[in-house]
Amino acid sequence: MGVLGKDRTVIDLKSLAQKREIKNKPVKVVSFSSVKDIKNVDVVYTNYDKNFDISYVLNKISSSNTLLITENYPFNSSMINIVNVGSDFQYEINEKLMRRSNITAYYNLRKNAISTIEKWKQLFQNSEDTLAKTKDKLSEVEGNIKLKDEEIKGQKQTIGDKENLLKNKNKSLANQENEIKELISLSELQKKKYSDKLIIESELEQRILKQVDSLKNKQEKIAQSNSEIEKQNVILVQQREDILDKELKAKEINEKLNTQRTINYLLLALVLFAVILVWVILRNYYGTKRLNTVLKEKNNTIYSQSFTLASKNKELEEFAYITSHDLKEPLATISGLIALLKDDYKGKLDDDAMMSMEFIDKSSERMRTQIDDLLEYSKLGKSKEKTEIDCNDLLGEITLDIANAITRFNAKVTYGDLPTVLGSKVELRGVFQNLINNAIKFKKADVDPEVVISFKTVIYGPQNKNFWQFEVADNGIGISQKHKSKVFSIFQRLHSREEYEGTGIGLSFCKKIVESLGGQIWFESEVHKGTTFFFTIPK
Image 1 (tube, rainbow, N blue to C red):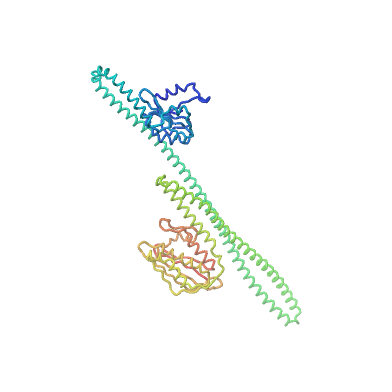
Image 2: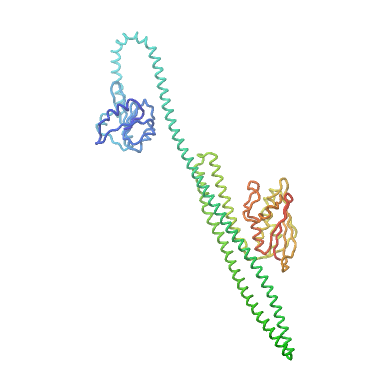
């Protein structure tokens, strides 16, 4: 049995409960200072003087099959309510409330209970009549002590006022104590939620750091593979040059053999000379045969190395695609978790916590963009279909596509009569668009950007091949010479994201596209004096 409030009633009930049993079970009495502490009891008792909200108590015990007994509460507000009427005690039963808690009242209990308001009124009326008679008898006695009462009346009134004031203060203190306990409980809950949030943020941060380290390691592996491929390309070029030299020598030897054969037929008479000539011819023949054998072996080696190189390139592209695809899944999970946390704890977390959530969300979005750019980078150079491209039409389309940027920065893009080239339109479009966008983006403060595109025909290489050489010049902030080696490296940024947006992969795109078309790309620049990018395409 539980008693709400701490007073003499608890002690009396504990005394009555000693050595008593109900259904062979001992009766235990416990005290609760507040409604929220009620648990593990079959009966709850409270007095109206304790100022507990009866509705709150009923709601607390509604699901626990607990009987509520009250004293001096309003009619029909409790399951069993005991009322002090005169010198007697009566009780009422609310069977509707008892049925809600699966409690049944025995017949004798119902029989002796006052079940209607009319009976209550009649009971109170009888009590009033008895009280009136008692008052008449007491009035005579009161007359005798009236004078004495008048003397101490003032003192009693003063004491009563002080007692009422003290009682009200005690009630106020009790209410404040309950409120403080509830606030402490809420504070503990907030601390737990904040602790859980810190744990989640720490786990998310560790997962992001691991993903970044993994991406860096894979980028290093890609860079090493590219370095090995470049070395293999240099070796192949050297071997091709050696083969060309030996082919020229073999051609010269064949010409000499033809000359010797002609002389041999003309100078048959000179036997000795013929023998010497035959010896020379045989020696040259076997030498040529050996050279042809060596040449054949080197051709086979070159073919094998070319096949290996193509296989490695394919594996590298597949590795980049799979890596990028696999990295997207944990990032999507992180973004989903952040979105759920932001929705679940919206209005519950402070500004610093929400700012941390927003920072993690934006970091995940930037990494997703970089992965997409890396995936697109791995696909560059695959297009083998080459078509004729009118560069004038191509630049016209590009300026229309970036018209918003041109208008926003008040930029000016000019170009003359450009040639028609052979290549992939999508890839060449990417080169021009990246260079023009960079020229507009990296502009000087308070200076409208200007971009001038021109071309000329040049001759490069040992075979004197003809190339189209395009120039894209701007009046922007320029590039320092100390950054020259970083410009075309993937994911390399020369400025912070707060100064200029981007992922640092645009010029890497340009380099890979131009080289896949058989050309080269470079630049000339001075700080604060603009930059000119050059790239070539075979005619």
